[in-house]
Length: 298
Image (cartoon, rainbow, N blue to C red; front, side):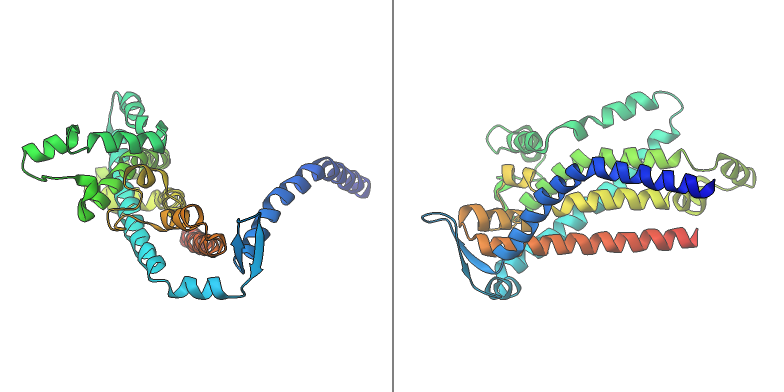
């Protein structure tokens, strides 16, 4: 009987596989062909003059990738941007989630208002930021000039431009971190907290020894989501500064855009794009190992 059920199960799986195979084949074709095409492009000089043509150049693009000072500068800028945005979003998002979770009334209303920036398209956020920071009629520029904190073109200054685009990203995506952390706070064991409070523990002690260890897994999830997004970030910087001034905000996706669509150096752009993919995979592997270590210790 068990053998008969096993045959029926295998035949059922075979039927499901047969029904899904056209979609799987189509998905493989539309994903694998571009992937291998980009790998092949990275070993060629690609020209669009008179039609698409490939001139095999071997490892020239890859050698150039590892010796190009502009690429190195963009990776450093990306790292600064990555640490600043993801770090601020994790800290502020966690604090906001703790505050909203502690509200006795109106928590849902406050959360709904906090989530509004997350639903605005990054292009709109960039246009809004450029308008508000305009030195002639922008509200934020006027406020900073009035209080004497900054007098000049915020997006046209090397130091302030990076701060501005980082804060735009933080404003938009901190609510996402807060939402994820708030979901994790719902799983914190209330009886343990009550017992600790009865023993005289204060809130900082509860936070360090009970709450944060209980939501460490969900914090890693939030960190992974924002890290993956920050690596490929493009829209706000492209709309506001386009990588300037003096390449101070030219993170690696903006550099890749310039190489591919301003200079039409497609072979080299393919090599840069693959390096971004490898970096993303390495970051994902690091997070998976952290997840496994966290599961083992818990």
